[in-house]
Image (cartoon, rainbow, N blue to C red; front, side, top):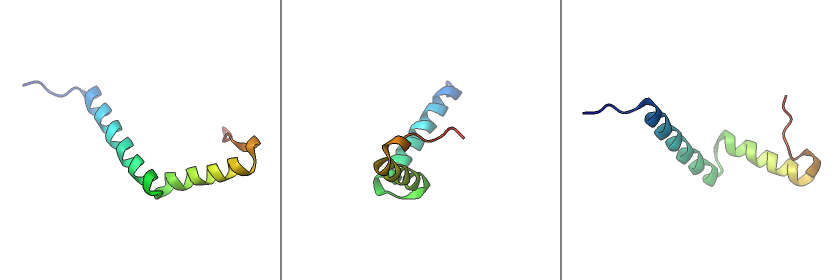
Length: 55
């Protein structure tokens, strides 16, 4: 039998993480959703602040 490649496993883990993140974003829950909602509100109020600083 062949052993799974480490790169293949890493790719599968990334895909699983993205699926989980989408679920939380769709439900508008979790820290990432809160950050994105805050960013969207700031961008609506002041278009000049659309991009986050690199600090």
